[in-house]
Amino acid sequence: MYPPRNFPPRRPRIRENVNEAIRASEVRAIYPDGEVVVLPIGEAIKRAKDLGLDLILVSPTAVPPVAKAMDYGQWQYETKKKAHDARKKQHVILVKEVKFRPNTDDHDYEFKKNNAIRFLKEGNRVKAVVQFRGREIAHTDLGHKLLQRFAKDLAGIGAVEGQPKQEGRNAHVIISPAKVAAPPAKEKEKQAKPEPPPPAPAQ
Image (cartoon, rainbow, N blue to C red):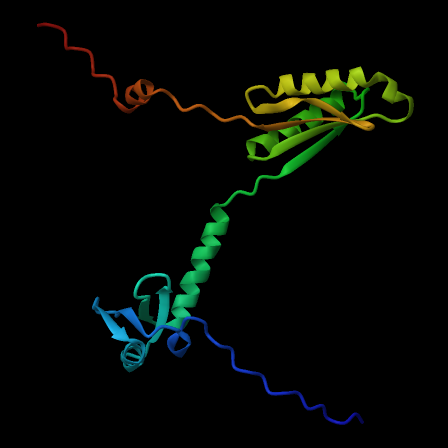
């Protein structure tokens, strides 16, 4: 039987910017009843605890720092929810790659072109690559023509970033999602205002 192992006791987790962890001599304290008052930190914490709440620093760079009396668990929940909602609204632009050969047949070309259209509509960039193997490297012009055809087929959906580039045995071109131009102001007004009904015929 193994002897018991003595682990050191866990240190309590220190809550940053809450109650006694606030490193300020005084704060502008906000209480649930709407009262806002500048108080020494000790008195501000005591008043919050008398209400069964914590004093949480919400604006440390203000002069004096701003702290709010509220439930720490509720504050944590709201903070995590705001961060989660902000991440959902963010769209990470990825570079999606589609690969061709100089002699890619029409069926395979159309399949990959449709994938590229979907990527662009999702807001991502597309990197079209033509790979040359063996003796195909002697016909790089075919690869460049294929990339030019590809860019032309995606016109209106994507915008080409420069000309096709040759790097070793690969040629590639980058295509970004096309920016849709906003309609002119007059056109917007025309869309917003319904046309008046025709005048009634004279009796």
